[in-house]
Image: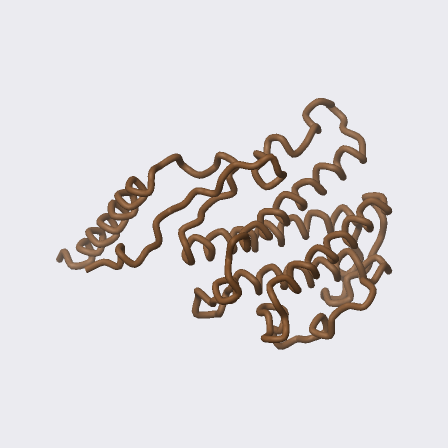
Length: 231
């Protein structure tokens, strides 16, 4: 007996006019020049960061407090925690690293016991989103103010690897944010079936076709196990 009936019906995210639904091919104009200048390269990196940042936040749309906090993995991964974590990490990399610390940071920023991975009872969904937006605005100001080769220091990295440039940190944070946006996509799909970003990268299927698709994959998985039983 499989648990197919317990899986939420798939609801593809609607395409919007926002950056969330933009295809990755639209994020850069680098291809229009054989030698793109620094401003174009910085814009490309910044737009990738902005797209993944917006995609992460969009996964909270329409959720109640309980749903946004609900842990769906054995390690407690939850949507609101992912947003809070990225906001905190972002504030450090584009703040302290370049001598531009975020004003009045919350106390949990300095915590090392996982307080950035969940929202406490004293924090609301709106509180976390507001902090993420404040962190993003501060990060964007740093990106606008500095050149790609601007130097910074990451004090929490190992000695000998702490000296960085804005270029390095932009790459690092675009990766970090995309990684957690991917986590959020899966968490949201497990909560209520909402999937994708509306950017055309999710296959076009009806809810019924998605059920059949998953049943097919379950059948393959179950039949593959029979090979282990063959002498």
